[in-house]
Length: 80
Image (tube, rainbow, N blue to C red):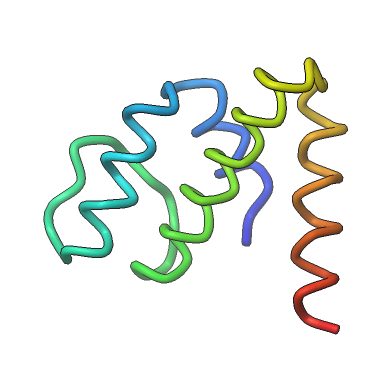
């Protein structure tokens, strides 16, 4: 997971475009947007993180850093 790649997605694309990229990755189709990542798994991680962050920002009015912190906390909790 690369934070600059996630920030680029959050800043560049809207949630609809990101969800379309998510679906394309699940279906192993060509992406309509540029998503950085070493492989499809990392690309999917970046897209899912960007979707979560955008939704947190829009529903709770959180800023980018707070939304990113919430996402990374969520990931850490899943790993424990």
